[in-house]
Image (tube, rainbow over all chains, first blue to last red; front, side, top):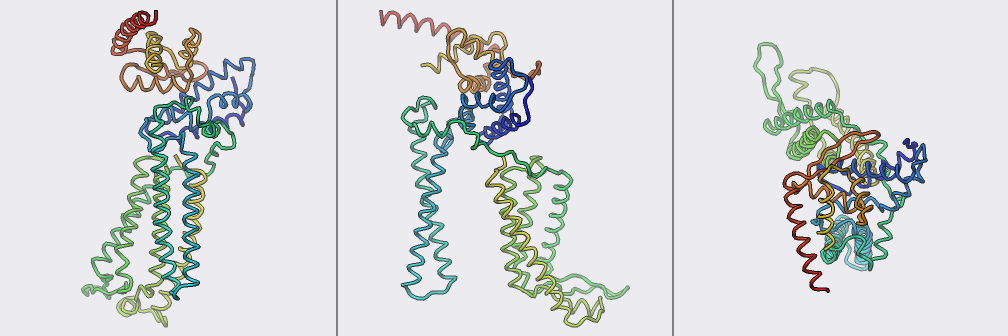
Length: 346
Length: 96
């Protein structure tokens, strides 16, 4: 029995939907068994069909229900909020968090207009602090309420929940709600990951050296002479070195995790996004700390080139490079975040 | 009650190996209605409890996972059958 291309894609999307609601090492195996069951059912229902179509598949999917419903049967009853209630929980949590943050924004605006004059940064800091605690409280309350509901009905099967008609409806199969296949998912490249690990270790060693030497490097001005330590990184940069080491260490740990697990996952992708955001913040502080290098002493002892304003020029070049890196990283992080939200990795 | 009965019904049909779909068909043909949403997770739980053995086998035209009772499962089945018959007799006495 053949299956046409569109039906094959629909089946893959359905199975991907099931896998996204499962966890653990058996996830692939469960999906494979469901696929086997679907083909057995199709073979019995449509024995005369040479090539299965989307319509044939959808007959079976409508009987099985939404992928989350299928996946739920395999999950232990330990989830804080199971997939029966998760769709409603997600909607309620989003609405409530948006309302709370909106209300706090409004009150901040009113307080700014009618209250004592305050600096922009003070107002922004107050708003972010209030918004964060308000959103967290709203999220926590909704989570607790739904966890309570989940416990109250945990012994009921999906079909026994006659009182929740709306819930049954949202757990019905709808093709429009199936996840898209990750077309542009980054393929795992072992060589690239090894390169990242090696590069990360070199970076970490370099930063450790800067930290230990106070930004000075040994330079030998001519053969036979003993090396003298010359300051390259300024005192403005040195306080930022521990943060740079921290970010490099986090990225190195991510590369090692990636190497061990052998594929990109939601955890490693979000991990990468988080370290990139932290890196952008650090680059912002680095720009603010300019000048971060001084080359005059090095030039005098070793380079001997005649360039006016060497320090200023070098720092200007570094500033431009950091500015470009910030711009590029923000675009990259935005794309990755959008993709990860729209098509979450398993 | 039905949950316990499903376990007994499934185990009783697995003295000879079966894949999920064939087991559902067999139970349904004998008048015991059970769906894939109940049976497949149950088979996995029984296997986790080391009552069943399973293996993937590629048989034309697709791979299927076959389940069969192991010794522990067989012992439990005997015990469940005995308990079931005793319960049936008790209930018969009660409702007559």
